[in-house]
Image (cartoon, rainbow, N blue to C red):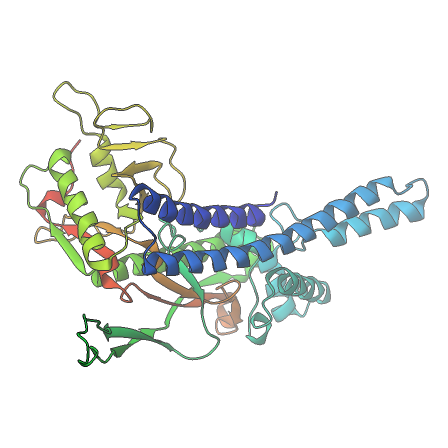
Length: 439
């Protein structure tokens, strides 16, 4: 299974797990699911349906490739004509640009635009056609740029920097093709009902709403690359592109986390000159109940900096036994449990039954001493992220440094994000109890 298809299956599994968690929580509490939970489940189901369609498309492509490769193996290669034809069939079934391929996307893009290289143009054209077929993104070709091959961004985005562990888990939407502002209606006064005595007027309260405007942000970066590096370097082009892509994803994730912090409608203050996990734990449960009391739906995640989870995991009781243990079944009075297998976007641990996402983009310079971090407790379905369909990256070569034999490489994308649709779906824990931990 290729990495793109694996990622689709992983996204589908994550959304299915959120649905299961919502339904299981309602069953455990012996109640029906709330209106908010119903809307969340419906939205997740719709996203799963789109992912299923996408998985079917990509699976069909992979099946055809496998069938073509198998057919090519059976072709009689005894004559020179057959030997020449057989590899041609196989080559056309492979992606034009791939990690183990002989051609470089960046080098071809440079050669096609600056040098007018016909072969490079043909490979770029074939690559763009592959992107249209696989991503169903007809709008990309309208821009004065190119769609970067997925493997160039996949290799670095999650690893070179902090990546986007939170941005990958929030509620996703496709960014509209036009406009720099998104507007959604936000009800501020709801209807009302009351008991009616016979012959008296029925309760009437007019609904009122306000407009929530969300700005579309442009995230961009550039790098000047020497012509010598592009034409004669080994791996330089991929390294530059991957680094720009990594920086893009990390900044987007940092902005999403900052939006959740600034929009959180509930606050818990943890003031402590000598912080301990035992004193922090009630604050986490206070944040949980505040979300449940005001949002009328349950939180489904805890987001914190890696150092804060490490603080929890390092805690021991009076007999030096760890308060957080790696086995989810069997521990007595454990603060946290988990498999202990850290994965991208998943710490492997849960606290109070909520999965913990560790994100190094969480600020650690808060408070008067600029050494405090923040813990977020909330519902990922009420953190919204709009991104451009298909790849958010566009590559342009600007002939502004030709006198220095340099080429300008630019990566940019558009995104919008908000956690202000239901601010009370999020609570933040701040205070002196969250200063830099010691171990």
